[in-house]
Amino acid sequence: MTEEGNILIVDDVSTHLLLLQSILHDEGYNTDITNKPQDVLELLLEKEYNVVLLDVMMPKMDGLQVLDAIKSNPKLSLINVIIISARTDSWSIKSALDKGAFDYITKPINIRDVRNKVKSAMIESL
Image (cartoon, rainbow, N blue to C red; front, side, top):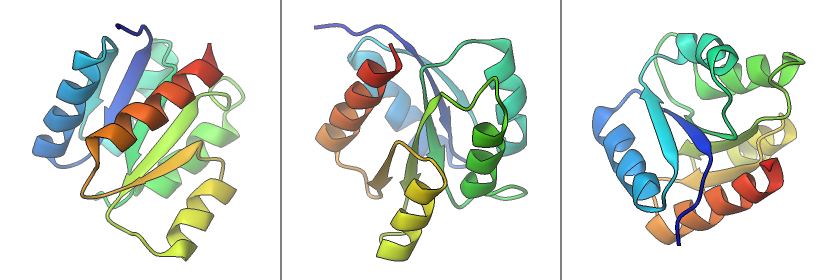
């Protein structure tokens, strides 16, 4: 079964980007990747995305700062953002969800978990 929808994947580690892109490409999604969190708003304004997969721990701008910027922009605030992080403590998860994240995936990632949460976010966005 193939899905449709545009997903932006943001992570500063190229192997993470390529792994997530491969998983989601196999599901039939259109994916774009960036390792520059500071470029995310510009990318989101250039092309319509349904879902953003966003790493938290990145240089220059962390994922929660990017999430705040997305949610505070009226043109982007409805995009479903899924946080992906090695932080597994309840405070980090609650903080991301309180800031408006659609869901939270912990690293190391579980492929089934990624597929299911992205599918839920995609259904919600259509």
